[in-house]
Length: 403
Image (cartoon, rainbow, N blue to C red; front, side, top):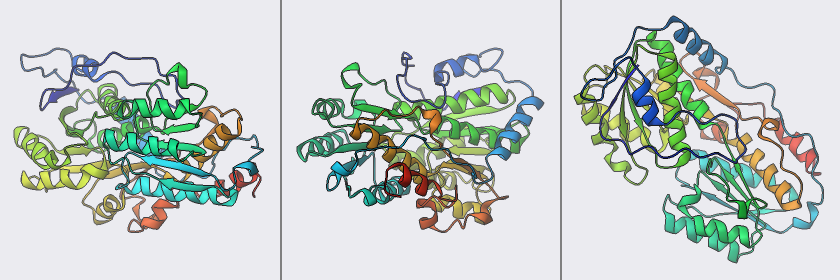
């Protein structure tokens, strides 16, 4: 594989040991991927690629096939949680990185549904991807004496002091989709979770490898704005390095605070690399539509195949129309119920199970299974009907003593 950075990437950051609930190991740093993908490097920084790998293609095809069906066996923790009656009438605060994304809207709805039989209310505060707003949200939760806080894709560095203040106040925190190490001073109040963005991101690389037969020219429109998205980015590059020595990957970075620049970034990258035949966009929200605009600006809409991450409804509609190759997503409903379970255990003083005791269902969607999920239905995405049969709800209610 050879990688062409379409613009200067940031200097690699020192890897740190992750003290979090984890489903997957940290992928190699982007810088390592850039220098280790080929047999040599020319003066422009482009590593020489190799021939397509039959083994890599076979692996990619098997990985895609494995994740096409809905999940039929959902694992949830087996230990019951007691003493939850004392929280009746209390409030949990949900703080997503941005409530504009359908995924986080689904999280809010499902946490609310999960908490309702327990008499626990859910208050939302949209961080709007802004450090000052995120800080205000956490501080408000402390002032309101929330029984707990669930954050979503909100890295510690975005509001470190506010996180620390909440932990010091004794408020339990579930930081979902955060891979930052938990400071020792917070350890008894804060749990981080990994919902496997890096795993899902690799699957979209596999979809490209399988479709191209191991010979793809890829524009990877990605972001490394947070520790989690950086891990996902590294995972994609690592997957191409491992499975597709015949692939060429060009990166085009975008920032969550400058989404309006994505069309120009993508258009310029495509015009500079006319051999590109696949565009991989992470994530459908907020980058999907702006990236498509950039593809159209470049005049390459009929020459490239698109893959994405997040499986929002507009992406599913593109799949149904045949204008997108593949997409992947994690079930927002089960993730929300998993996080509610973790929160209830923290609130009650019970031990929080290891990650292996929770299921994180993810699924690839393409032309072979798009008809099975009614891609136009926001409701079915939000309630998780695309991913499981929903039986985990009854199981969790029994564990919490309300089923």
